[in-house]
Image (cartoon, rainbow, N blue to C red; front, top):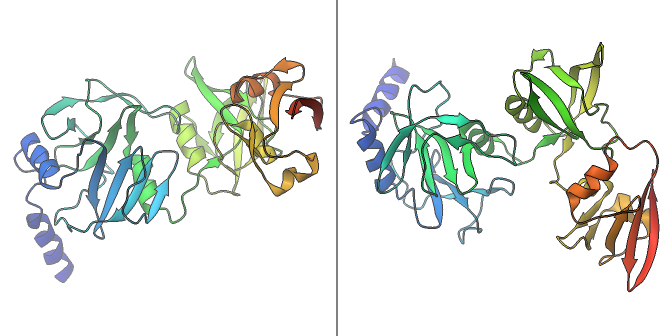
Length: 321
């Protein structure tokens, strides 16, 4: 009985929830100071603020997602009516900033961490997506919309990380097909052209859902992936590696800047005898401009990879098996 009374009191306490329609949501965004010129700062449970910002906040950071530019800090104002994540299917979605409310719907889902969702109407950035009860549906950025599933996971997870099987997929004739396969992930058994049927015995519906499920895997966890390869159906094992960005050579323990200069060498890469500042020039005789060039040259690699580096005008090869 006490729990019921508490639930009812909380329901009536939130004056904005499902009352007054879209204008009440606009008022809640305004009252909470959720939108500024530079960032989104959404009050959530436990007197915290969920921040989206292209630059780190000056306040003490409790948690950070470098892929999505999300932060959590303490809410010093202690706004009484924190925003909740809507876990149910929404009949309507609105984009809200300090000046206007726009009705519409998501027409393209978020595809992993590289391609954000798209709304049916133009939205200002930054702003938020809400449902009619003022529950959070997404955060609007210049790159698109960060969907609620990614936001909720960031809020709940203790240590921010993402899983990666070493592949990228695409939708092709209503099938989910492997379009890229990273040869530097030793546990990767998947090949370009594989049609992914199931992940952990669950049918794979589309590429966006598969990418989300893969990213949300715990680092080091083992999964079964059923694929159709040519005329055969096989079940493979996939081990979720820690996602380290779009630079494929990071799996070897090497990190590069935009000019392909080595800026970090992990312990597992020390035997290459490379040094900070060495510049990558070629992969198997092809000149390399960026990380994508490395991948284009090396996916499904069956022979050793020869990398040409330059150090103080001296060029030398490193062989990667």
